[in-house]
Length: 176
Image (cartoon, rainbow, N blue to C red):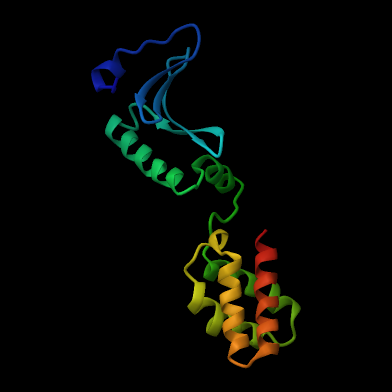
């Protein structure tokens, strides 16, 4: 049964923590100390997760439902909001695009370790970014890389195709 503001206000603390469901993964967590927090519970790839959205009344019923809908959309795309929140707390970049990670790779690895980084810069700007710069790094497939490398090879530039593949492989290894 869907929650209402009056029903939420009538919730009282008990000796043990308990949950009150609003539906579609949204629930209220009521603690013995009287704190009431919003939770989004979901299942992804056979594992259960839960994300704390905020405390009631700071986060209203409508706002909690809106947040739940946004997180449910992420889950439907195969993205785990709980894992992303943990990575964000650890300070890691969450789901960078190929362009974002490529620029980071260029600044942190190429400029520091190569005498002449101009060839890598050309591959990034002329080959990699136009083809897949806006794709999320974790969604790049083998087929995407093969398409890019084979196009270069089929254009008669076999050695350049090999070097392009090497750059793509190095970028992907740094991302892992």
